[in-house]
Length: 82
Image (cartoon, rainbow, N blue to C red; front, side):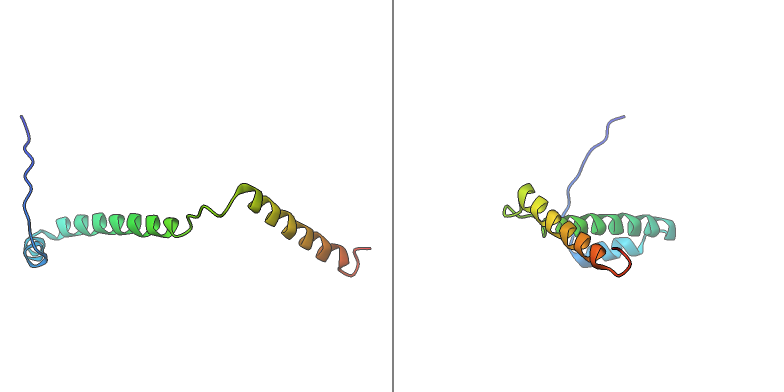
C-alpha cells in the first residue's frame, strides 16, 4: 500500500472550519501537538536570545573566580568564623 502526500493552501478561516469538524478526541490531540510546537518554538527563541560571540570560557572562568572570592571573604568575615 503506497501513500501520497498532497499540499494545499488554506487560510485561517478554512483551517478553523476543518478544526470545528473534528471530534473532541481529535481536537485534544491537535491541541497537544500545537502546544508542543509552541513550546519548542518559544524555547528555541529563548535560547537563541542568549547566543553571543562575546562570551568566552576565559571570561566565564574569571567571573566565577571573582564570585567565589567574594563569597569566601563574606564567609570568613562573619562573626564566629575566627
